[in-house]
Image 1 (cartoon, rainbow over the protein chains, first blue to last red):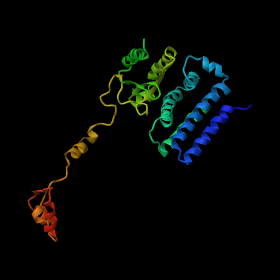
Image 2: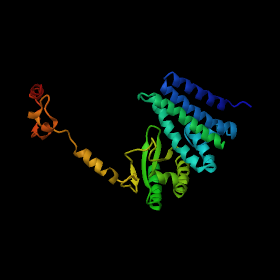
Image 3: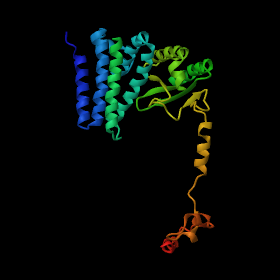
Image 4: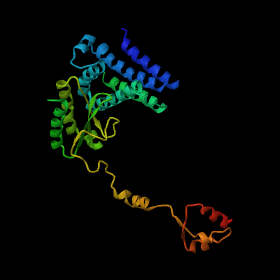
Length: 130
Length: 154
């Protein structure tokens, strides 16, 4: 059975790593973040059977917000410590992505490496439970 | 009731139950998220009763205010703000390292300054160090006459 969201997540991560090698740091942060988001959607839609319509009917604004909230509802019952870590790290990563995409701040190589590291940490944490 | 007012009331309740826990609230406009910092670090990471207080609040808040986001973070999070909108149980010293450890060092660092006095008349090439050190010190004048010192020494 094909899992396009999982495939997209993997591709986004490979692209992030490639962009890092080419010193395109803002784009690295962007792709690393979306690798995470696509993995979350992979869990919700391809593993747990939620639909896009279900996400849209949730009273929250935006796919990111909806996906995070829906995932956290089950993650907290799996492992409270990992839930705590996840609900702290994902917004911080989101901030990095917003700054990388929309603000004029220059980004350095460290930011690129950190983005990939945090994306992999988030995905690996989710793999433990889903 | 606004989201902020709701949080003020709810966090105040938590602060009463956990007087040893500092609580700081701010709003992050980059990601439009309410940020609650719980400190010190060991309370955030190890106090399971504290977890049982704020985790249900996090879900309750998002049910009541579906347009709003919230995150409960530790004091070393990049989302932690140095200018909270409100706080409870303000801690006098969030760090556990005793101040006395640095006290002597810091006093010496504050008192140290470059000397502006030197044994001017004694500085010549070949002059014995002991003689120079024993020579009465004079104030160094930081004007054109400073060149005189080098010339005299030569």
